[in-house]
Image 1: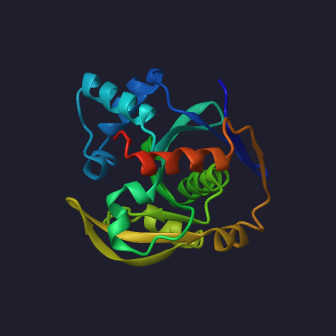
Image 2: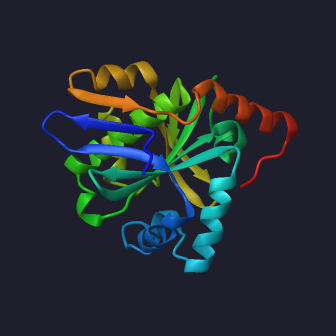
Amino acid sequence: MAFECSITEESGPTISFRPVNEEDVPILHEWMHQKHIYPFWKLNLSLEEIKVWVKNSISSRHKRVFMGYLNDEPVCYVIGYDVRQDPIRHFYSIEPRDMGMHLLIGPRRLLNKEDGETIIRAMTLFLFEKFGANRMIGEPDYRNRIVIPILKKLGANVIKEIQINEKRAKLVIANRNDFYQNIGDSNITSSFHLLNSPDHEWKVFNEVIKHGSSKT
């Protein structure tokens, strides 16, 4: 299993990330039917429909999708996407290298303040490094009482409440410098084996915008 990143907290677990592949369909199908996930993601679909969704996500040129592991257990799913190609662009002033982020934690037992913070901190660190982002942009459902406080604790700012498509959400922005200052005393060890450089990722995103050939 080829991980692009492994993050270990002092005397704690290791969280690792790799690109999603079609073998992840069964676990993602299971997660999307969990009571703590489907009200927010609205993807409690059939196995075949999830397979199509995963295939389209993998082939997309304006986003990247990853599975996260806590030691050897798959525990989270995270999307990094180019905000310039997403409806979120209509709700704030975009700056260079803004990266959008969607996330979920699969096992319900880990959706708590302590484990949730560990996992979300690792996801955010991974995406900052994977894409060389200057800011991370999120739009969690306004009802999410676990994720929003964790993001704020990690240094993100809740800008405003928005209505995006059919979703009432909080617009959240995390600046790179604020995030790294926030985790400066966390005793985190990280190693990266990125498949592509951040510059390459942005070159692909820019080509998609130039030629208008993005897939969903």
